[in-house]
Length: 425
Image (cartoon, rainbow, N blue to C red; front, side):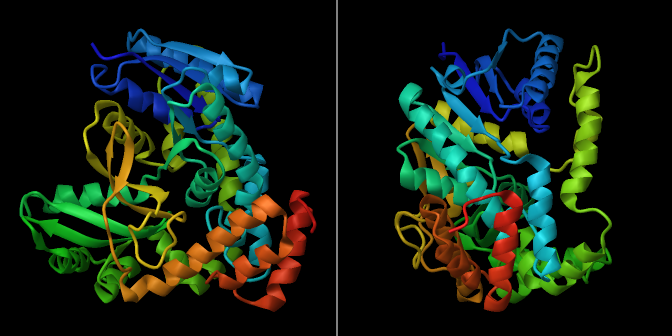
């Protein structure tokens, strides 16, 4: 019989927690025999609501799983097999600042890239290092499955500055790969898809069936399908044809930045403000007496596929399956032109010992410069978080394709540093 599993969820007061619970309860317990969830959050009220809902959901399914709310981090971590991290330092108010301040300067405000992603990383890296070091002390056998954004930067900081075992997860590229397999798997048996890039800057650049590269054929079929459905103006389908790879949707930030900045500037509410309102409804539903299902409003929150990717990684680690999954890991020679200890998002084979990246080689020239520029921004951001060197922040934004204007960067940094109350040197 497989040994029972203990799962710690750090940031369990998140509105994503019911998504995780719903996914867990739909799994075959023989493959992942979870015996206990340890829930930790610094926000006691939010934690109480989500722990209560989790317990009721488990009872509804008749599963013998314990739920423990923990007030100390190490209490939650001790003896854990898996540690899911989904923290948000500063909450949605900080996200609103990350979104709204850059827009004043004509620059995209977004929580995973550019100035917004940088300041989320600056707030988050110290907390994530504290968590990772605690895992090293009390649960060195555990794998951290990180969803905390900006996921690639956070994962790089943890791998550079701790010895904790961590995989950076995101549902974006894995869901695209699953859609490709579902749609084209009959015509292309044994289909495998591979990606190269960074978290939220990924490209499915190679699709193989029966040992034959079918990337171009599938991209052409995807574009033709979009045209038949009246979606020939869809930019990502056109970009896929033009660059010979299928980009994640976040590439709109780079390929149509002017249009997107104008759209965001014209909106009455930022995404953070929209989510603040949605979360009120999510928590009201979750706290209702007798509530024992995932809140309906959660469907409007985003993050689809979140639980499926988590369980795919856990299943591969626990059952030593060698499953292929796109995740963020240190490069270690996988991608040419990226340093060994810099984190990339590539397809890995996952087993009991962790993730083994599948070699990529050179980044296709059509988007090589974009990936390398954003990678430089990420590395400089991690270094700045560790040293509090403002010059590194400026260097990072000079490299970033969404910024790159020295006259804007200085006042933008001044305003963001002051707004968040961060270090000033």
